[in-house]
Length: 127
View 1 (cartoon, rainbow, N blue to C red):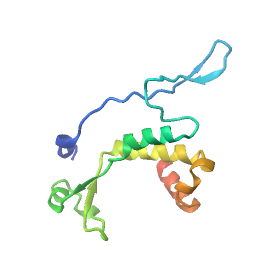
View 2: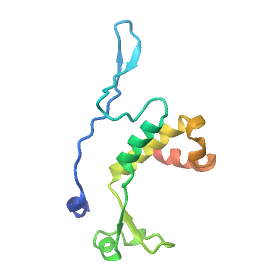
View 3: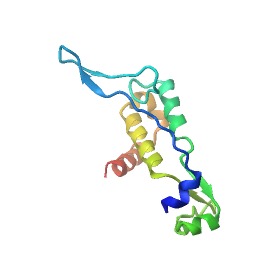
View 4: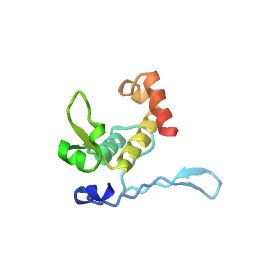
């Protein structure tokens, strides 16, 4: 199955920064590269825009013949009569972003699922 996606996949190297370091006093701080995108920190429109740019096109619509050729025929969305495929790393990044947002409910609360769905979503991520 990975071979089927190969013609459509374009690689782009993105360096994530923000590793934790200790200064000479033993105080923990986040190592930030001002030249690189910021994906963590105090919630902001800039951080949200970086995440959106990273994962916004994570799914691709497929025709039924394309889906059948890679074994996805059982994954049709019944209401849409369509098929969708994606590279799993983008789903994983979406999940990391979701957990990041759940940590700041005061900022993201109205954009997140209701509590029972959040629990299901985060539970699926951490399972």
